[in-house]
Image: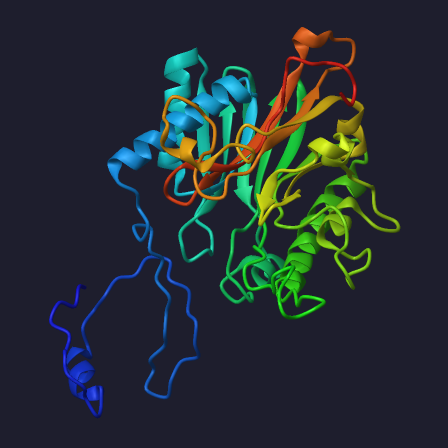
Length: 374
């Protein structure tokens, strides 16, 4: 239903206009209820707006071109990519098809609707010629609903689980996009220490993901598990937070099988994936189980994005400076036991700017180096 003839004068009682519309049937897809049912049997819903910030065809073409170049040139065609801020599977597959046409790969895409009212999703791209996708599903259940769902403080992106077979090994990858820091006090604002109102939800989200991973590792301590994506938080506790920060929760506490954050293995000067108000920081992470860490060969963060001027954002000839507030790229190489560097496989991730398919954040895997912890 589209309302074109809204009143343009002040009305003492809006019911004079709206009551005339009662009884009309409307269809709103996957709309979360955001208020209790009234005595009259009415309830409010919040509709997703997938078209709200749809780019022009020219802008979309530029972003798709830049992303395809980045996957080919910067990430060097990793076996699996974890993507955040995907509009839908179709646009992610369009990106994969462009890379396939240019390089001969066979990337396929998967993503699912989330509770984010903007319609953004977490997705996977994988090369079907080198990797088998055994299963893909969204985490669910009461705890997931409370941390990510419509009833959570800020409805967001439920984690996406992919079970892949690579080089004869099964690996479970959990793709994430946690609650942003939007709404927190600025670092150099009037309030000190700054109030971080979004912190509690990210901790809740981290606990949900950690419990999921722990269930896998408690059953099989040798399982290959990765937690990757945009966690929207640092690798250390902020003032007054202590050690109970979201990344620490994921790394594991007493009695839990630890996860290793590969970003911590990068050189200090290179350890950033985002530049905000002049501050270089890490918001994107890749954590791995002990068995997967044993296969780990190298980590690097590529700064072709966050360190480039915004003016390059409209230049379709380069993958640099994609989207709004671009971030860096980085990642890790995994070498199967007994295999040389040419046998390495890699996992990377990137963040597409909402509905523009423009990479803001990248965590990639350089396959050209096989020196451990390089």
